[in-house]
Length: 357
Image (cartoon, rainbow, N blue to C red):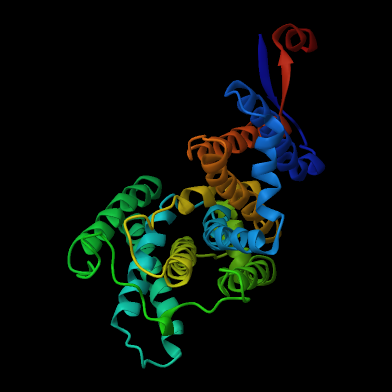
């Protein structure tokens, strides 16, 4: 019988190489998957790993997908490093989109350019308020943040549906459940001509740099990480666990809300029932594949964006279901978990273990 035995000192090299090995395993499993479905594996891999980067326009589309994934993952990394499990970033993303959409809908054609800043700030505020509900329940009643944050996702979806099917529904929209298109003055400026990517991509990269500074160059960031790794040591050092809880949730919620604002005021341009795109859940994978490090999460967000675009292209060009994106995400996650397990543990036979005794 095989047993898992804790390694005395896990390899630091493999700790960082583990995501690369997990990606390689995912590619191999993807080849098998395409072959089983009767599709050309080479063509399938080309759609997932070459088509999203083959042209300037394709790179722009990659940036559109990567922006919300990176922003949400950066916020989640603050929580996870603090040993706080915010699983409801999708709900915070939706509420951020709703708040931003509400500001955009009130703006007229003659509104000044400042309204773009107002739209983004509204998104941040919405995400923070929604995350604050979980923080309050955890702080006041010791409620489990995993369950509370996850259940609030479904509440956020219902709030969005109520608005787009009800009071915010476009009366000239041929009965489709959507708001009217936002005025041009409220839209996020595009980064370059001929591409849909907005300045949100730049904001996400700047946020990654700011997070690095916060985590590794400030006392508050150090306190958060110490609280996550060694709660007893954090209390002895005088670090407030309550402050860490609220800080982590508000940063995470604000980042998710900003992602929602950039999405609805950017490429989407209105509120629809399809705003929930699963970014909040996919960002969890991005955070862990990126090792909760800003640079790693930038690369992981690009990879996950390729999965999103590849899944859409596989649907149109190979006749495969769009859910193939979720399959690749799941394969990557489980491969990473398996690799991480072997980094921290080694397999030992029962006989060998008894002999060692």
